[in-house]
Length: 142
Length: 196
Figure 1: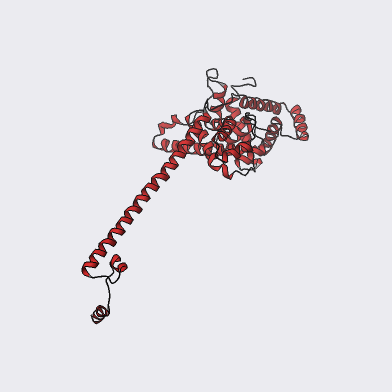
Figure 2: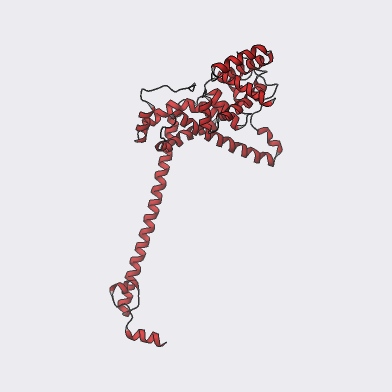
């Protein structure tokens, strides 16, 4: 019963929205003539369709496109601003790191030249102690 | 059936405007917004009712479209594509609204007065416009039924277009529409005739 009800209702909707095929439409009209209750339901459905589609066209009000373009511009600016702030932060972190490395290298070089630690400039800058046969022998014997 | 609220406007086609917008022409994108804003308004306001939320979802629809413009291959009509974004955002917004209301109601049952607008038999028809009546009646439907009514009955999309926009079979569209109209008939039928 429920299935049949949905079926004829869907046929009525198709007829009302112009989607029913000619054969289906003719069959429905014949049935509506035979069944007054069904005709009344069809009329109610038709009235409902008019009510729903006959309302005013809703709008967002004037200058909606301008508001969209402003929002788009704001979002673009925010994206650029975030990129710029990240770039600024990383640039400063990188600079600080570079300064720290250079300072350490200079410090090690100065210390090495005073204490004769490194055997080469690179070892001195990196703070690597100079190893010779004597120190290696001492370490091994310990 | 073609949508009833096709945007009119400049002589440039959608494809030409889209091409220019992709190349960074803001004026072309603005023309597309102007061309489709009424269609999006019909969808979003039909789904959410008029107000700030609808305006926000409407704007967000075009922002999403702007971001996704590069991916639009032209498989569907541009209007259908934009409407799909609008309906998806509206459904998300409705879900958020319902989640919020559920939480609110669970904490304090008296807060049910803030639930979505409801219809009752003693509604004063004369005091309210037909549009408001329709909005309030449609607002009582489940979101998926609401989407079908808005697309099929208010915007005039065909059953197959509605099915495509909602990514559901055509049979589902018809059954949802049938159930929705049955409910709407109960709400609006006694108060509004064919002439309104």
